Amino acid sequence: MGEDCPSQFSSYLSSVGADGETTMNESNLLQSLGQVSAGDAAEIFRDHLRGCVREMICDVMAAEVTELCGTKHAPSGGEVFRSGNSPGRVIFEGQRENVVRPRVRERQANGSTSEVPLDSYESARNPQRLQAAIVSALMAGVSTRDVKNVQPAAEGMSKSNVSRHWQQAGHKFVDQLRSRDLSQFDWAVLMLDGIRLSKDQLAIAAVGITSDGHKHVLDFELGSSESAEVCRGLMCRLMKRGFHCDRRLLAVLDGSDALRLVVKEFFADSVIQRCLVHKERNIRAKLSKRHWGELARLFKRLRAVQGKQAAEEVVRELEAFLQPINAEALKSLHEAGEDLIALQSLNVPNTLHRNLLSTNAIENSFRNTRRKLGRVTRFRAETDQATRWLAFALTEVEKGFRRISGYADMPALIAALERPKQDESTSHKTNDFAAHKFSVGLTADHQTVPNT
Image (cartoon, rainbow, N blue to C red; front, top):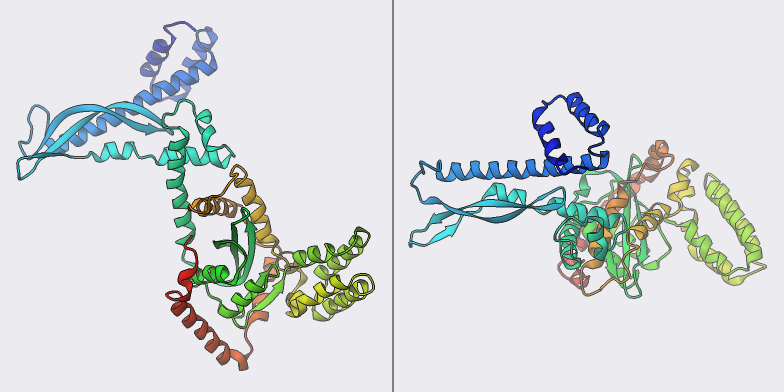
């Protein structure tokens, strides 16, 4: 490419009008003459565009100075006056560009002067675009130390600076997740499950399903285990944000006694469905491999049958299969009790079984979350690092949520969860008690819950 190509290209840009076809013809002319390649033309155009943006920002700053101080040759003579200029930097397309910024000062009553910040300059140097570029790189799995390799032309991409920008962006994800008003939705299903982050850190996450079948990430709570206190802290925050159910709540749990206990504290008449995937996994761990095929077949039948009577028949078949081969496996089956077939006992269409007989909806969220957290090798419990990363990952995962399978049959589930007439007064008293316990406990017992 000849040395005068940039100037030639700039002259072409200045000579043509706004007609895109004319500009394209001039570019084709340069390429046909062999003076510049397509890649070089793109780079020259980007440089020209950055120059135009710098010029535009300078013009806007000059206009603001004129508005504050009057014209340069006829100043207003007020307390605000021009004070020369100094080097500055603005952000464009995630990169910092050098500019010359005008300075304005204001006389104070005591005779001193103070700097007057220019709104146009502050807006142009807002790091929001830079933070967006950093978050995009981290979403793609780039570590903080390698972000500078993704955008080598951008300044301020050192590991420490990237970490600082990520902390600021991460707090926005936390606020975005935990500032949602949950009272505007008609909730029908609550799913709770845990995700192990490290040896000493575990998060209990909550996913809610509305009466029309839409899934939403609700919140999460950090702790060392799936303890009742950690789950209680999560439920308190959900209630404070307006989570409620006008009927019996269907809660799908992984089998933790602590989670079941706390859900019953807040929703005494809730219907608890044990996750069949977790239960099958627990029983399979007690059997030899030669029995795994039959166990999988029976649990597949259990997930497919409709109605309480058919589900009870499959449970009896499971008992008959496990009794002669493994007492511990049979004990594990009995441990679930009626929670094993709670959904079938509501006699709802089996089209809802795929999503509501297990915590797969939240398990899949965790699987995608782990992909987002794949670059994090150590979560520091003494900081809010895990909170920021989890809020970011779960918020991103939620963007891919779809309505549950069989959502057209949700009205049947809603009807089955309606409280019996004779139990309405008792249920309302129980829920009022739970709400009172929440409001009192939030300032007493729940102060020990880790603030994440």
